[in-house]
Every structure is written in C-alpha cells, then in structure tokens.
Image 1 (cartoon, one colour):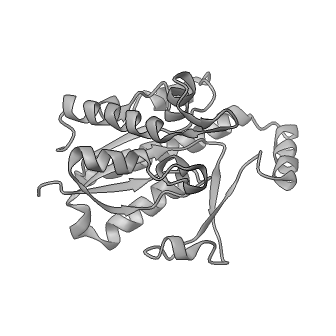
Image 2: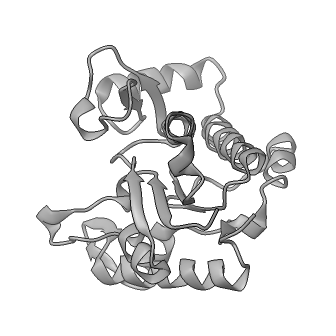
Length: 230
C-alpha cells in the first residue's frame, strides 16, 4: 500500500508552542515536504520513550488499515523521563484515541522526584545506566515492532542522553538500525543549540527555523535512503 499519511509521536519537540510564537514543528514541516497528511500526532510535552513505544503500538493495533498507509516519525526523548500510566485520566482530552493516560517521573521535575532519585543513588543506582536502559530498550522495542509489521519509519533523538560506557548497553545500542535512525550520535536539541535556532537563550526548544531546517535534513535522509518503503 502506498504511503499517504504521516504518524508522529515523541515529546514537545513534535508539538506546537504558540505561546512562544512557534506555530509549527518538524513533523508538520516534514509532512509538507513529503506531501503527506498527518494521520495522528501522539507527541506529548515532557514525556519519555516508554509512553511513545506503548501508545504507538496501541494506535497501530486499533487502526491497522490506517497504519498500513503511514510513514512513522518517532522523536526519541531522554531516558531521564520515566513514564507511567495513571488512574486519573490526565490530559485524556488531548489523546482521545488512547484509553491509557500518562504522567512522567523525572529527577528534575519536583522536590519529591529529586528526593527519590537521591534515594536510588544511595542504594547503588547508576543514574546514567538507568536512563540509557530506559531509552534504548524502548527504542529497540519499537524498532522491532515496525520491522515485524513492515511499517516504514524513521527515529531520531530529540534530546541526548549521557555517553554510554557500559559494555552491555553498548552491545544493544549496536543493534539499532542506523539506516532508519537519523544522526544517532546527536539530537534535535544539539542541532538547534549549535546553530542558534532555539526559541530564546532561556528556552532550548526549536524556533520555527529550527523546525524547518531539521525537517529538511530528515527529508534528505529519507530520500537518500529510500525509506518510504521497507
């Protein structure tokens, strides 16, 4: 079936920020460049890879005929964002296709999270390894799902995690399909910081040009590697 739609999931780097004057994002810009209709955008600000992996697969199983028409663009968030389902319907109105609602534990979010993070470190937790496992395991999970289903896709980092030193984690990272992972050693936030394309010096989210230029790079990578098919 010919790809005619674009599926989006990730964090705030794939959402609008109208309060900061940014009324687009790289997913919208890529859809224009690829001449695709956006089927759905499940991206949520501050969310991590566990939610992205789970909600993407749930959506595909709920809407298999639409999924067959999609190219999947996934913005991989930081492993410091550890998602969990909620029982309070948090922001249910934003994602009506999902029965699950989500919040995210982050060490920088509030005092209770910071206290718990410190507790984990006192008990021997390696924070870098924890976040890398959280990120990588969900990336690979989604990669294997797409390839099993034969869905065309592209993944990239919105935010980078710490450099990997553990040999077990390095081994699994080597299993990432680099043909379908754009700039695996960098991220969208790295790009906009390096090229002065952030909203402001105090807000590292991409400016309009930061989204437009990133979408151009994504499109060039997709075309160069013939990624519309799998």
